[in-house]
Image 1: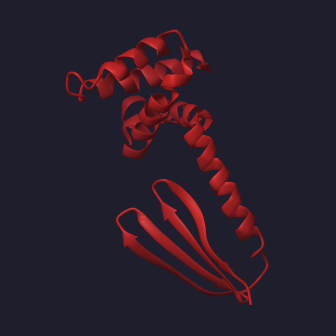
Image 2: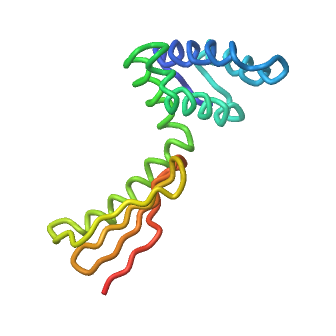
Length: 149
């Protein structure tokens, strides 16, 4: 079970209500079932991926802030961070930060970002002979290349 606080349940309910207005009939059944579960403040494990998707969509598009201002956005972000996708994103960021921490105090020789396609970037850093390439994509962050020498 995935438990929601009362405030989180309100924020998720408002988000789902907005989402349900744009989903075509027949494609909204799972979200309607999720909305029902949210009112009880307990979402079944099988519905967590849908909850994760709804929160991510509202956060990525700015709909969370539009619907309920910054407070709703904060609440949805808290819910998202507890989902498997949110936990994975946090872990990815922690892994990248470990690599970047090893560069602290060194001299930056070059930095370049490449736009591979919309929303997908590659950041190349050379720091005292250490070459790091970081992929920055909608799905998260990843160290693509790390070379010393």
